Length: 282
Image (cartoon, rainbow, N blue to C red):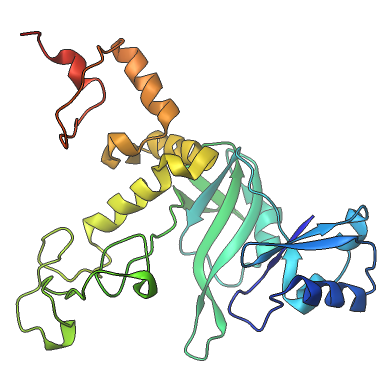
């Protein structure tokens, strides 16, 4: 079995020996080896899985890691009253598809405590997001949950943080090589070139990069599932064709016919799969 940290920024066990000491202190001695997986997970070699599940792991900021199922979709629900508990919603929820889990989204307050919001994530069975979800007869609109992409606070590009950023500092207001605090120019986003700052929540590049990130073939099997979800909800039209999972590109090319194989010019990008087959021979 695999354990993971509940809150990664808390004073948590960072070594396998510390996890083993905690488990024995909780009265669980039925394991032969503990191996650290990445930064926040620990693999426990044990045959007493049910007994481990009954152990109070949350006292050590630990929980059982549940691998995400390929046949599940996460829906995003807004404006859910704070008086609804997660277990209460799961018990009284009604939808077109089975709902497996309900989790209220939290934010960190000024004192770093977690605060409940009016937004909820619902894990649904299958690849389709229901249009509406009902709790106690009250209807809520459900949307496909696409997690936000990280934005660098140094160069204001996407996909990495400021600690790992190597390019020079870029102004969030105009894109120049200076800090935004000394900028006196009109706002012009360095990403989409529109009249707002790079961290504007309405920036069209945010949604586009989010879709591309989720559709990259390096995401293995998860990318294929997310691309199917985006296609089902109409978001796939904004995704770069070259960022689609390999299997999807092959399937779409197969419908268009077998393209003739050509060698494109160096550094020249083919905009659409199968476009080379449409060229007439000289």
